[in-house]
Structure formats: C-alpha cells, structure tokens
Length: 613
Image (tube, rainbow, N blue to C red):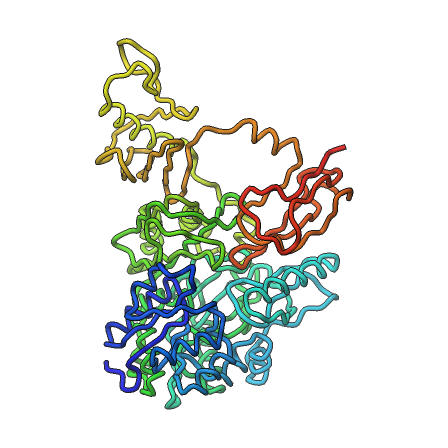
C-alpha cells in the first residue's frame, strides 16, 4: 500500500511504541522523525529514526508542534500516553497544517474524556456503570482524563473517601494535567472486555474483534488476550455492535478502543455489561489484535490519516487462534510492586515470540517515565496452547541489573485461575502469587561456580571448603549453600550471562559479579549476595522508614514530636507516575523527618524515624 499525502512522519512518543510505529512507517517508505529529551539522547527510538529533534518535554505541545514543522512532517503519530488524547495538541497540529494520526480534536473532547463519553453513551442508549455516591460502597474514584490505571482508587467506606480522592487527584494531575474525578459504583468481580474499532473519513467503522484485559493490578493491565475467553456469543455480538454504533455516532476516525465492564455470570454476576470509556488512540495491547486478525493496525491508522478508505469490510475481518500479551514492568512485584531503576546489564528475550520493546543492554532505566519496558506476545491455535507458549516465553526472558515483574506475570500465566478464565479485575489485588523458591537460583549459581573452580588453578581456599586433598566439599559462596544435583545443561563459559539448566530445577540465566551473583529463573531475578545482618537489625528495631525507590516526596504528613500509630501514613512518594504511601513501621514518636515535600530523594534515603516508647 502507498501513502499519498504522508511522506514524513514524526512520532511524538518514546520507547517501544515509537519503535513499533517506525517499523511500519519505514516499510511504507515514509521518512521517520523522533523527538527526545536531553536525558533520552541515546535512547533506542532516537537511533531508529531517520531524524531526531530534542524537545524540553514530551508533554510540551508548542515544542512538539515546532519540531514537526522544523522536520517538515506531514503527520504526527502520538502513540499512547503523553499527548495522544490531548485535544489542544490535535488543534495545534491542525492549525499548523499537520495531520494527526488519530481522531479530530472535537472527537477527543467528546470521547477522550470519561465524563463526556459517559454522557454520549447514555444518549446513545448504551448501558453505563451507575454513578456512585455516599449511600453505597464500594465505589471507584477515577480520573476523567487519561488511563493506564493512574488516578484510580477503590473506596470501601466514607472514612476513606477524602484520602482516596486527594491521592487520585494528585496522580491524575501529574500524569494527565487534569484532576477532574468521576465516582461510579464498583463491581467487585467484573471483567474488563474491550472492542477494537477502526474508522475512516468515508463513513466506515469496523470492529476488529474483542480483547480481555481483566488481569490488572490497581487498574493497571498486566496480561491481555484476544479474543475474550468464556464470552457468550450474544454478549460478544452486543458489545461489538455497541462499540461500532457509538464510534459511528461521533464520526470516529482512526484506531480506538471501546471498553466495557462485564458482570460475569460465572463469577456470580448478572451477565450485564456497561460502557466504561473510549480510548481515542492505539492501545498498548494492540499486538494481540494484530496477531489474531493478521492486520497491521498502525498501517491502517496511517492509511486513514492519509485520507484513504479502509481497504477491507467487516466480513473481511477474520479472527484466527488466540493471542496473549504480557507487559514487562520495571517493578518489584514480589516486594510491594515498588518501581525499580538502574542499568540493565544484560537483556534476553525469547527469539520465537513477538517482543515489542526498547530495552538494550547497558541502558539506564529511570523513574522519570512509565515503568513498562516491553511486551512479550504469543499466538497459538487455541487459548491453552497460547497460555503454555507464554509461560515458556517468559521462562526465556531475563533482565539483569534491575528487577522486573517477569517472574510475577509468569506465575500469573501459569496459575489455575488464569488457565480457567476466572481472573476478574480485582483478583490480583486480593490474591498473593508465590515467588519461585531461591533454591533453584542457588543450584544454578552452584553449577556456574563449579565450572569456575574447575577452570581455576588448585587453591586450598576455594569456596568448596579448605582441603589439601580428597573429595570436594559443599559449595558455599556469599554465605549461601550452592549445592546442586541432577542432569545438567552446562554453561558455555563463566564470563557474562550464562544460560544453563538442571533437570528438575529449571533453566535459568546466571551472571557472576565480584560481590554477588545474579540469577534469573522462571523470569524472577535473585541477587545472591552476602546478607547484611546489622542493616536488617536496624530496620527491624529502629523504626526507620527509607525511600523504597528513587523519586519525589510528594507529601509529608507528620512533624518531629508527633505521636503515630503503627501503620499511620507518614508521607507519600511518587515515581514513574505512580504513588507509594509511606507508613509507620511501629507505634511511637516521630524523632526525625529527612526531607520536605517536593524533594527528590534517592533509593534508601532515611525519610522518617519513629522511636518506640
């Protein structure tokens, strides 16, 4: 296919979505332009583009439009997040004579905001979630602008309302520049089902099937799949029809997603579905739709932006097999879901799965942006085959140097609840997934250590015990027993990251360092270093509260001399556009406050000290 009007395309985004758009644009013969901040000067998306222009911020409308004009761009693709659903950005581009790869500013105003879209859905007789009020709990407080789970809180009592609204407003303002809130009834066991739509300027609106995104933590999607499993045909058809009707009603053009909340019968619900919102952009989870339809959604977006008619009809959209996507985040999912930052010393992705990412070895991951590092996507002939394929793919995914949620999403994909399609939107918030046991990591580290010893000159002080002769003793390093048994797939060497396996233990990746050995097994990263007993003792008895991540201290609730109960809120931190509440580890008196609100703090900085009586 050939574009008539779009010859140069600027992508107003970064990371994996910028790379994703560049791939299709380049295939269509379009010149690509990247924007970047000073901190992102060496980012992968900068090197992938034909031209790159620095801007002070990805959210600076004037600077991004100026960059597009300077590059001679015919169109701008906004990706997702940042300015992708900002009507002022769409208007500024239109005034500059530059096409936006997306709907018009008026449609963004009407559908891009949850409050306005709700009213349109009501007018179109599409069922919506009932409003929430003080007469009944639980309710969901959510930002009218934006998405991605930011600016959302579940409130279960009137006592929690003020705190939840304040936190949601702060988060929404930081992420979207708008702290308008909606309050709706909260469905305890709901499923998140969405319909992908695509419209053109010639009056055609198609659906490209549906997706299930019910696997969420704090309203942030973790696993997504297409098509939605265990959905009655009548319900599926009604959702798809409602999505197309709503998009047609507002004259929608480009790619969009109409999201619904299903109250499923199998989980004790009524079987009814409600309109939630419309995302007026490409979704993070669009690859699963591409995998089951065989369509390139970015190509269709560019054709529509070029003024062309969609090259297919509804009957041409055929779904084949099943696809599942896992989002890989820089967060410690088994340690309170704290955002992580650091340098990715080595990165291993499965070669036989689709991986959309922008993470390279040696790359610094900061808390300045969203924590998503990439997406692992699989496709198979049916859902169970796809699920097993995803588990295998996550077993072959390893990020060393910083902790990710790979082991967590692997455990979720392997769980019986996900296998049986019983995961609702709150399941992860009330369910604890068990991390892999450290014994497997220690065994894999032991194999590499034994290889090191076999290649090293004889030394009576080697880590397999002091001896002048005789058999080897137990392997001990950094105070840990690295004993292993079983058939071994040995490492190829001892330097760098080594892939190896032990029958009955699992395959994994091992990287030895001077002070610790890193091991990734079943996607989960272990750091086998020598424990610091003095630090642990201080943390347990001293009542210190350290910064669990590098970020900004948004709020300080206490002062020196205040008496606090165990669990009382001392302050609130923000990193990667998400908030983390700091609570008193013990009851007592606040004897020190280490930083003021608004301060940037480092990982491990002591922020509060509570002295026990």
